[in-house]
Structures are given as structure tokens and as C-alpha cells.
Length: 518
Image (cartoon, rainbow, N blue to C red; front, side):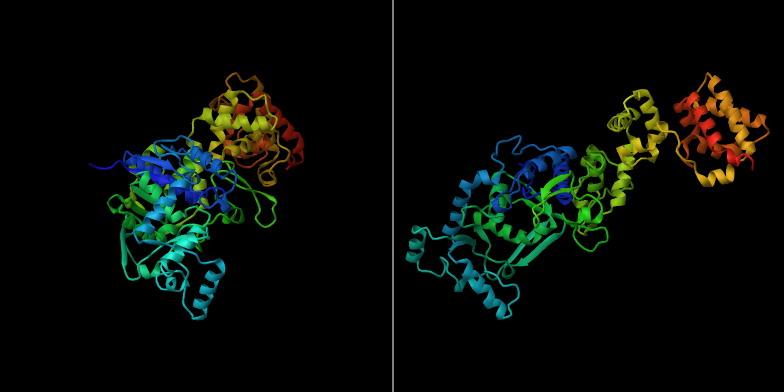
């Protein structure tokens, strides 16, 4: 009988969730849903020294904003609760002791000073990458080198110790990564990692293996930075006797900076001028202790659907030309086989493009809601929903973010304070001014104020004066909006209304009369 697919996202609450972490969560979610399985979230907080207040709630809010729905988590617990490793602390020791009893782990009583001395000796001997391993452990104070009675005395006396994994000296560790194929590592390159710390807390290596086994995780999809730890984890599964249910591994490609010079880090965002966090983060500067704020995609005006669509393509492609996918479509198309081994370069212009596409595809009624919210925040409270919808429909092609709608809409609420000088100098003359004056005189009496009717009236006036429409259009735009370019002019005048349009033209005629003699 096939096992139900179960995946996990296991962040540490050490600060804001980086977009690389969001991508990991997304790929886990897409894979689980595609396979009809479940996704859980586990908080890996074994390192209490790095715990940051508010980080856990930030993770929850970020995933909710992204539309990543968890089947099990600290906030909607399931059959494998608790989902915080700190709350699972009492059980880890029994598994570490199991490894000690089976000869696959040992007690190490070395003091920090003794560890420093060991590293100094190895460095002086020009040993590359000094570490506690199958060779150096023979010269250290541990249960492999000390007499059994002395080990018992140290334990009974409460002497501080850690439990280390006993890594074999000459052995190949192999596993098949779903993205990278077979990975083979010689055990001589693996050090005797600490499994239980002196404070009684497990390290990541022990806790994540035990939890993944107990929570019946079938696939571990995580970042490439964990690839060097995978052979160690394979050894742990073997030593516990869990190889038959060991999850399949898939290590995702790195996210690179836009210039490709290195991994996109938490520190790169504000320095490079774009967010690297899904939501705004309020923290404290580690050096100065001063409050800090890091920008987020949500607060910068990005839509969650656009953000998720963009992230999905950072390392994966559907094998087609389609670029816009809903979450349901991503689930349908996603496959681990189409995840690349190669690093993905972050492209801020691309995420802006996605946002434009998603924003412009929204119903005009929803865009009107964004517009009204921004206008009300600016004190513009007398705009009807109908008018807001008309304006939003007209200006949306010039918007990247919801806030852009209000900026583009200002021409409907503020008369021009200046006029494009280049257009005025080239297009404004007595003949054009006369045509605009005649048009402004007839406008208020118009009963049909649709864009087509206004254009018909303008054409009638201009041609009646022996002119062509092209002679007056740019001058008319400048008179009404002050700018040389913008949305459809006839639609602008229709929304402004014939009275307001006529008044704007007359004001422009008064202010630009110095050009009418030309």
C-alpha cells in the first residue's frame, strides 16, 4: 500500500521569513496538493539563543497572505502535535541515548578550551577544515576514549557533556536526490556532529530526523544549503533502523542576487532597493539596538497571486510558454522533475511585470476599491463608486501597484497647475485656440456625454472651422490635463463632465493667451 504524501516546512523563528523560505514552502505546498497529500509546518526552535519574539507570528501571517494553506501546524494542530520542537524537548534524549546504546553515538565531555586547543593543533599542523571526527575523537575526552567507570562517574556527577554521532571513518554514503540524482559522499568528510547539546536541547540534525520520522514525512523538499547535511541525515536514518521509511530528498536551487554574484540574503533587500521579505518586518539592529524596518512585498503594493506566480518560476518551469498561473493551475502543472539544479537569478523587473498583469486583470469594481481607499486616505471622500470604477478602468494600464491608480487619477481631481511647454510651443496658436474656445462654448449644452459623442462634437467643431482633428488634439489634452500624454482623452473628458472640461479649457485659454498671437 502506497503511503500518503506528507511534506513539511520547518522554519526557525529567528527573524523575518526570507522569500527563499517562502519559495520552499510554496514548492512543498504545490507538491503535496498535486499528489493529494498533506503539508505541515513545524517550528524548529531548538536554538533558543537565536529565538526572536514575533518571528513565529510573522511566519504564520506570511504564509496566510501567500495563500499557502497548512494541514497541520502549531496553529491548527493535528495528530502529531506539538509542532514546536521546544515543546517536544523531553522526548529527544531517549533517541540520542538509543544511538549511544547501539554504538552509533557517544558522550563527549570536552570543555570549550579543550575544543579550541584541538582546533589550534590541527591548524598548526596545516590540517584543512579542522573538525571533531573519526580521527581526532581518539585524542579527546569522550566515552570512546575514557574508561567505562570514569564515564559513569562523570555522568553521575552531572558533568557537562554533549552527545555526538559516531561517523564511520571509511564509508560511502549514498542517496538519490529527486532533483540532483545520486549523491555520493565519503564519510571522512563528515564530522561527528553534536546531536544533544549540554543544555539538554537537541540540535537540528537529531530533532529534524526524529520529528520527520514520527510525523511520517515522505518527502523533504528544502534549500540547497542543506545538501551538505543530507549524508549525515541518511546515516541517522540508517542507525535508527528507519531506512525503509526514510523520506525522499529534493534540494532546491539557490536564489541569486540580480547580478548573479551570490546568494540573495536577508541583508540584500533594502540595500539593493527591493524587498526580500513577504511582509514588512519590524526588528532591532544587532549592532546599535535601534528599531529597524525592512520592506515587504505586501506593503510595497504587490498582490499575493503575482508574488506567488513569480516565486514559482524561480527554479521551476512548466515546459510551456505560459507564464501566468493561478494557484490551482500551479498545483496542476507542478512537478519536482521540472525543478532546475541551477541557481535562479532574482529579477525585480519580472516581479513588477507579474504585478502589472495581475492588477490589470482584476475586475474594475475591485480596482475601484483600491482607488477609493487611497483617495480617502488623501482626504478625497466625495468620489462615487461609479466614478471610481470608470477612472480605474481608464488608468489601470498605466499602473503597476494599487497605489498607482490614485496617482494616475489625480488629473480628475486637480486642475492643471502647469502646461507641457514643448506641446504649447509647437501646437498652440491662434487658430488652435479659436477651435478650443468654440468647442468649450458648445460642450456644456451637450446631452450625450459619452466618449464617442464628445469626439463627434469636437470633430464637428474643428471641421467646421476648416481644420483637421489632429491639429488640435494635443493642445486640447494639454489644456484639460496639463500633460502631453495619458489615458484616452475622450474618456477623460467624459468622466470629468462637460462643464468641468469646458472650464479647464477656458482657464488654459486665459493662461496661454500669449501664444494665441503666433
